[in-house]
Length: 423
Ligand code: ADP
Ligand code: ASP
Ligand code: MG
Image (tube, rainbow, N blue to C red):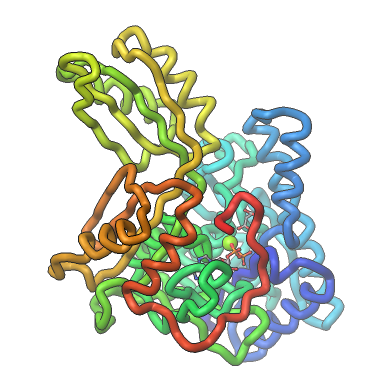
């Protein structure tokens, strides 16, 4: 028998009626003769609600206790789905990360999975049960509860599929697949039949939160066939994530995305001598702070000094300022400037390789709108521009248009835009 891993996101298990519907979908796969492992997220906006509760207690909740709190959301969904399956006559068992043995690094709030024990899972499957596993959570070797970062249930599902050598991992969500951009922002976004692991990874990293970046990384590494499809329109086949060699590239750009989760820090007036960048970024990495875009400008406000600007996740601001303060006299910086009204807009496409002028056409599109570019970064298949947060939506819509990504239909969306996202 083949093993299929199915993952259902928060909207798909938002209430008990939807959970009963998920049970039907699971049983349909089971009736096709497959062994099924199901990964579920917390119901609806449960995780957001739990974060809000924590913030009511403290602006900076202790990371260990935050994981204890957030991991409870998925615990509710697994029990309810296993109940729904059993009530419908399907043999099923729920398991949390500790019971399975989803082992992560000893880091809270964004831990990476390092190992998954499969013995108990396989035993249950052998006994004919559907196994319902809690997404998003893990456990360290010492038995500490961790979480994988927001949206991390996708990664739980793909990692389980890799560990079990599953035939396929299906990510069921509230849209019909991966689109050329977020259909909540650009309603005529087109669904992609296929997208390569490489492009999907870039898209996920630059803000297309339909898939968690580490889920795509893991799928690529272990060659897990991955499909994104709708929980509600089962007749539609969604989007297949495939190797780039299997694709024909018609357009230079496959998708566009905006990311509002970062802020920019400028370390001002650092002496223009070797070693300062090394000191700053070594200390930041030791504090487990991920830095994205970096630019060093020759400011000349003070002779022979530079400004070093970089972007980080908004959630890492306090940790970053504390780290920089400890370094301030050593690196002789005059001050640190924080700019949190920024957005990163990006274009992604394997088709831009060897096609000159794609970055130029992006800058031209932004220039025509009078949008100022604060930072630029590129990879082989991506160009990102940092712009003012208030310009992000206009930029995204215009870039989608520039690269001819729209279609005549309007995508059906179930989810709503959270306040902190682009609107
Ligand atoms: P789930 O709860 O199922 O994990 P998410 O909210 O994490 O769902 O991801 C699905 C949402 O991702 C969609 O509702 C959609 O608005 C948003 N999204 C952002 N970018 C894209 C994209 N390029 N293609 C499809 N959906 C996208
Ligand atoms: N429940 C977690 C979140 O909302 C994980 C997930 O849904 O993937 O981020
Ligand atoms: Mg998600």
